[in-house]
Amino acid sequence: MRILSFLYMRMTWEMTGISTIIRLFKSALQWHQVCMTEIPDHITAEAAVLPMTGDSPQATRILRRAIVTCALPPGARLSEVVLAREFHLGRGALRAALRALQESGLVSSSPRSGWRVTPVSAPEIREVCAARRHLEPILTTATLDELAAEKLAALAGRHAALMQRFDDDPTGSAAIRAAEREIIDSVAEALSMPMVQGWLSDLWDRSVRLVNFFEETGPLRYTPAPRARLVQALTEGRRNEALEHLEAANRALEAWLLERFLESGARVQSGRPAPSRSRRSRQVNS
Image (cartoon, rainbow, N blue to C red; front, side, top):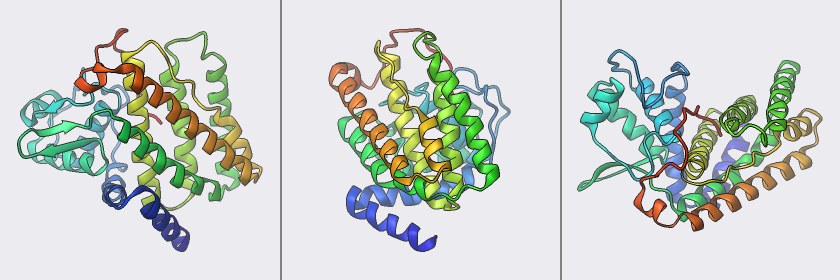
């Protein structure tokens, strides 16, 4: 498995660029710590009712969720004083969290402007989709034991049921993405490759942030991929079919994001989404 991991590292190094892989490599190390701390599902940027915390993995999870759900919108400047007060974070934990999120590609910093949420841009869309295109095929090599296969079948059934109500329930997108994320996270966990799992987790978070932004600022919703097909192909050992599903899903995502980007115009350039519908709480998904 280590050899396979190395080969995929080398492939992504060559195909997506040195700077991208360095950032993914560093973020994977941070991710392995962050994933050990659970944050209650009801925590949002609008109402973070927590005691002051000095725990940097917990701070990272709180801020990551706020960024992915666009409660902290693309392009927003981040004041450490304001963030510490609004999210009840210690300054040391906050700074460590911002550095971890920078390695994940969700925030950036400069001497003059300080911390800033990564803006939405065409290069960001292309980078995320290109990295997913070269990393996600490794999911088809996951070894699924009987227990993992049963869990995935149950998750796929729930996802399929939610998908059937997609057209009739305009508020169901978040639930569908949560179910989808649980599926692909479970497959990634079965790889037993923490570093690759961390890279994929960052890419999926960045993808969901982009979808959330365009859904928040425009009238169109993204139609999720039917992940029950992926689960069926994986559990029945049809690797080629699973690869085709991943490729098609990624192409559809990239096309939808680029179309919304071209339509969005000034909204994206300003980095300040003007919601066309009332803001709703969203969970972090992919």
